[in-house]
Length: 390
Ligand code: A3P
Ligand code: MG
Ligand code: MG
Image 1 (cartoon, rainbow, N blue to C red):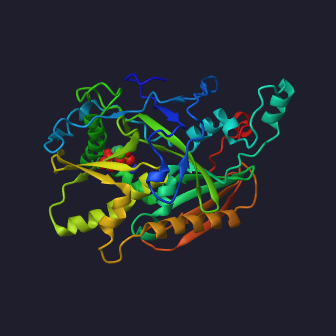
Image 2 (image 1 turned 180 degrees about the vertical axis):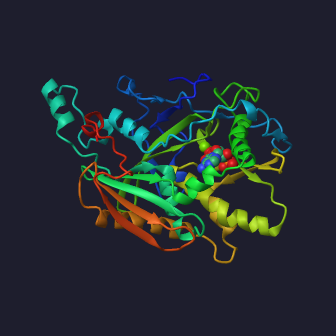
Image 3 (image 1 turned 45 degrees about the vertical axis):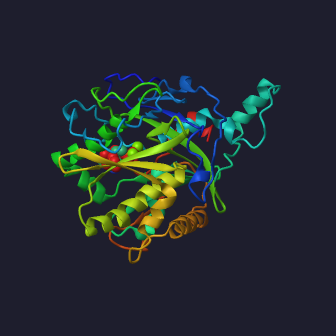
């Protein structure tokens, strides 16, 4: 893979397991650690049969380039909308890219240090003996963010499929009926506003440290850089991946980019702190991104103001609201819910799906259902290529 701006509509991306920027130590209770030491393990030969182009390196990592006059900006986010290269949203991502990453980095999960003198028969043995991943949970970061914010979410529900295989719990989020309906009824204006967030990234990033952002190029929302982290949450070991927008070359820290409507009054300010900051915090805290740069835009899609937030400060900004949100509550909820999964999902079978769901507009109402072995929520591919490596 490369970072060329090919007009192919296939998703492209790179996944890196190093964390030069995303040290979780900056972000609080969860410590993320690099799990590959920056080695570039190649797994591309396994990917011939798959539609998505992935490279296991930093080729898609973007660099944060601060504007020359950060206090005086005018960024038109509407520009270029008609040329957008749109990701095919009808194709659900499931957990496939994570499973591919795992299958290409299987040795990183081993507790024993691989011996360079091991014989071919040893290697054969390693591959077929179903050695465990030594990891409790595998998922996308977005799924964990959603779970973690549950105690304060009073609008959206969620749907989570869980499969236990070889003593690792694989978590895969599915769209709720409400979400499917919302997407089906998405207006042109809403679609364009989704573009604004991606266009903003173009204004502040470039493909190399040395170059300036090129805002004349086509915006391609198929491309992404993801970081994979191994971390612990209390008694649980986790490996998850999430998209990282860019890295600041000076500080060597990841930066998350966001857009938000300019705040004109107190009620907008309260909503911003109550509903938006918690999601921003959860998303960046989990993967260890210390800084968020927000572009505040008007209703015509023009950003006039940039604001930098350290994610440790986000809970403080919200703490004076009545019934505010607290990181501890979020983390404890996630911990307890992962405990609940461990207590509930006992069968080790890659076809077995256990469905956990939380109904929209209802607090503390989580349903559990065993779906059996042939459900529409099955997400671990039924092919030996993956399973012998999971
Ligand atoms: P904003 O959230 O800044 O508006 P992220 O912030 O997670 O890096 O996502 C980048 C942009 O992708 C978002 O910008 C938004 O425009 C778009 N986006 C992210 N998640 C989305 C979703 N679930 N539906 C529609 N657009 C989304
Ligand atoms: Mg992003
Ligand atoms: Mg972003």
